[in-house]
Length: 248
Length: 376
Image 1 (cartoon, each protein chain N blue to C red):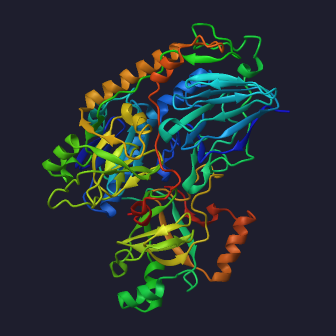
Image 2: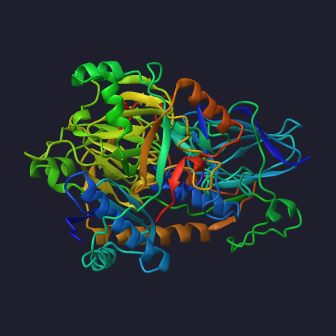
Image 3: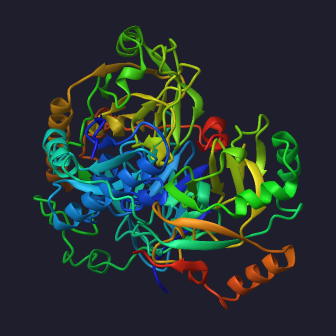
């Protein structure tokens, strides 16, 4: 595995850069590194480390300076990762999440289609036929940054961010797709709405998705989306029902 | 009836906080928790609580609480003081770094935290609230943790966890193990020698993105003064001062990577932002330096307009500072002793030792439009 840099966040954490650009190779490298390092963490062979997090091209190990040192950890990390082979196979669960692409919820679809010189239906088709990979969770609890968006849908953020993006909004920008777990301000182009709660503190692991998971969207009507919301509210169906495959 | 604290007035931003959501960053959950962990450890030691027990973090203005249903132990951090009024109309002061017992009907009227910043009020036994992801910290932006995911409101009722210390009041059975002086559990206790945080420049380790900045920018950063702006909250502290240039060909964007409280990011404006407890878990601006863990509590004492200077230290120095602070904290805890309400204690001496103040403009929880508009 190619270690590009090992960087200190003072005596609080160490970031290991594994790639220079966002994409499948970076995701596979990061996924492989996280799996190896978590294995060592569980075995107690990463002194002081409390938690390992991942981003698009890097892994960050958070540690307690009273129990571990940067020098010892950096050496240990290099010993573990340098000889490792990147595993490009699937690392997470496969999800098929409902998404309502109607005008009411896909508020930016028409403008986006005009901007991309594509028919509206073509924008929807490209989006729903994509298998997205969750590269990282961040910005807000449970918010997935998903790669794999076709080049034809690659647009920068909106110049005028919205003060309020509704919870569940599925949005694209900069070659990525996100789902907003909460209502918040945002500058991404909203293409639809997903009714499945992405973060629920009553679940043992509150975030629905994890880095390494894959997501495809299943188009649903507004009526069907409200039915799903109702079923979830009544606990007639759980979020797990939208998982197609367990972690390999 | 169970002993409890009723909130008569809540203060501007009083939050239940502990040491944060320490195993959930991988789910995109900020660490959160108190801004000053050394103060948390000390108020908890005063109460014989485990060091990471939750306390009330008070900002800008303070709450007024009344004890009902029985006695409740509380402890003030160095930035906090107040008056206890009994049902009979007697009053007595609650001094900084003091634990006292509120009897049924006693009203605790806290003063605004020192210098308008933050302070802590510890609760004997901690608070009987559900844990979220193993923590009782409050993360207001997403509305979870602590008390209903929000700041205290008038009328809220806080139930301390039942403890032997409370039940043992008057019998001495709960006498503090931390107290070599054998302080009784129901008696007032003080920290004779509270932890003195370092003075001088805030110590940082350069990086993680040192090479995203020109040498001139690094030199400026470690020699020139900055000041704390009102655009400061639990997420971060925006500074004013000389702008810091990004290196040619590098620019103000990186591929988002991991963040810790204390990381100092520099967006395109060239003005640094110190990330604090509620900062998001990843960020896309280059980080010129990171505050060492021993100096993070000092950030909690800064308020708008304060001057801040930085000094670069090595990782070995940062790690040594963490160990020294731990030893100093142990010494502070070992100095806990019984106080006498009659006034034998050198209150001025205690006040002089009070280095805790606070941040922040928390009336404006969302004053980081860059963060909020730019998830990438």
